[in-house]
Amino acid sequence: MFAAVGDRLVVNGTHVGDPVRCGEVIGVRHDDGSPPYLVRWEDDGHESLVFPGPGSVVHHYPHLMPD
Image 1 (cartoon, rainbow, N blue to C red):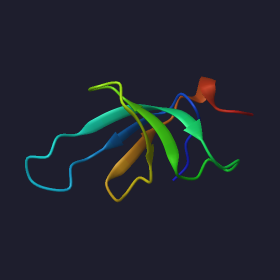
Image 2 (image 1 turned 135 degrees about the vertical axis):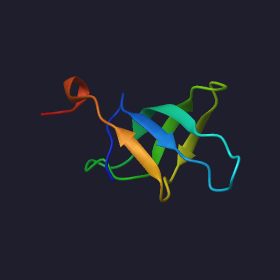
Image 3 (image 1 turned 60 degrees about the vertical axis):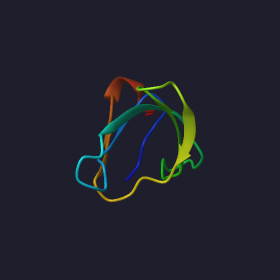
Image 4 (image 1 turned 180 degrees about the vertical axis):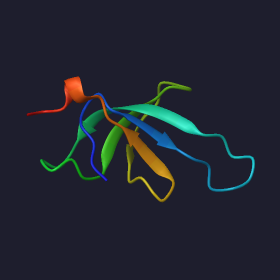
């Protein structure tokens, strides 16, 4: 998994009934785009350091990706 600033992280719940969380990647710690990521969550604006697990998906935005 890799991400760049401006991508969107979608994290599926791990238990039945858990909500899906979506957030914007606002920080990447490694040059290769590997986790962890600093994410601003859409539901409450909270920022947290995230190590995405299974079922997490990064939606890339090519116009924001480095060359």
